[in-house]
Image (cartoon, rainbow, N blue to C red; front, side, top):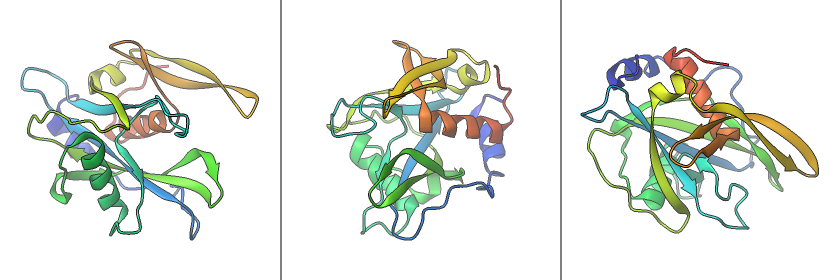
Length: 202
């Protein structure tokens, strides 16, 4: 089940569920690209992540995330937002033909003056091995085997403070460097694991 073809077959059945977040009219929207690949010398498909650059103006400064961002007025759809943002941030050219599934929308933890930001995750497959070209918003990238998530490797909790209140949320600590995957992107990964039917640990 860790191989790409089996994962794609399961994800092709995925549909946004009734619990998906819905952005109120006029509220900000965003989209991200969860990109899968199957290395020729590996037994498991891999999932692509970025580490956002440190920026005091970015509410997700330094976070592990999927490439993506807010919808621009010129974007024909949220799918086009995910494709455009991925091209801008990491230089990977995705197309509608690479789309595998759309996962349920996720509300962001922050609130803007225009309302709650809702993020739409789109899953893509990348068949060719293309090196990313990073813009200033991205510090580094990493590919993580889906088998790592299925086995629960690095699963733990992450403590942080927001608006003077302490929180402890579930997370994955990813190699190299024990990078912490938590929050909104963690929820997206868990949704993907559930859609695929991979066992969860903890």
